Amino acid sequence: MPKGCPTNGQQSSISLIIVEEWASIDPLAALAAVSSFKPSSLYFELEGTVGAFWAKNKPYELIQNIELLSQGSRIWALEVAFSYIAREDPLEAIESLSAIENFVGNTTSILQRIIDEWGMLAPDAATHWLLNDFDYKDPLLLHSLLEEVLPSLARQDPIKAFEIALQQPNPVGRFGLAGRVISQLIGDGEFEIAISLLPRMSEHDQIYAYEHVGRTLVNKGRTSEALELGSDLEPEQQQEYYRTVFQVWARTDPTDLYESLEDLPSSAVQSIAASELLTKGFDYSQLFTETQLERARSFLTSDDKNWVQMMEEFERLEKSVESKR
Image 1 (cartoon, rainbow, N blue to C red):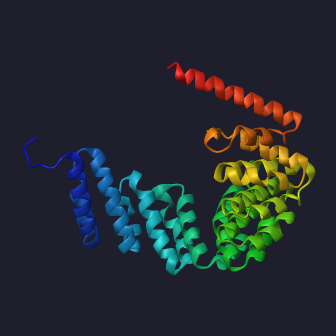
Image 2: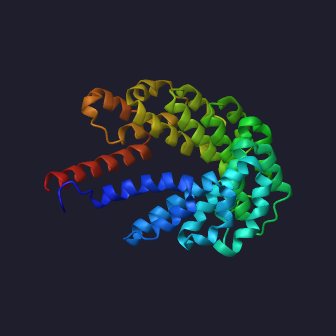
Image 3: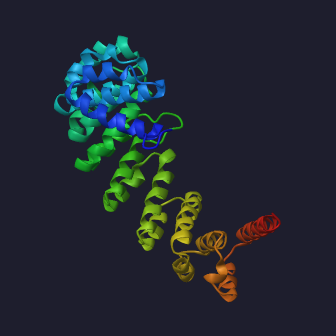
């Protein structure tokens, strides 16, 4: 390659910059120009760029000329175009979907972009449309659309969002909508509201939601609240919950967990905490003395003691194999 000539990567970057500017001014001319680019991989990249900028600046014009784009570039350009239309008139965007079905076939991803935009701007109206006016054949599609809308509604009216979520059937193998509402509330720091709603969740989702709240509380240093939250669960759920909480605690602040062992609510909970503390794979020689480690082991039940011994033996074997490589 002659000195000073751009590499293929540099040529691609330069071409993209030029095409972006051109597509913003005259997308039809830009589209005609990129058809001459070789190799074909660069052509499709540039065509996609033209389509996206065309959709952003002139969404209706892009839709009317969608047949000019190759099949592989159409969906993304249409998603951009319809998302911009949805910001002004989401119902018009939805009604216009039928006009492009012959060009792309499945319009589900485009509908999802419309609902995403609508949900962020007016979640109450978007939710009402989905529940009352959406003519759907696939319950999973409704579920996936509500997954995007209800968290936004939870920011405006958490109780309403939660009530709607509880009324929806939970597809097999999917996390319930109520859990999405709880996750949004926790993400926004609305712990009090989220915790008050946890007992009303379905049995299938409840333990996962409790664990999510508990992990987040521990990550924020609110360990006493995480411990108290576990007392609301049935005994068989408590073991799973506390193990999850102590896994996070042992990873984020093992010294604090060690110093808290004595104050944990029961011997069973103390054993779970000690077993998680002792099996996290840390170099404990830098954190705890042998006396402290023995004290931690003193909290173990016989079952947890066997588990810890097995994990420690596995770790020793692993280190032995590594040292021989």
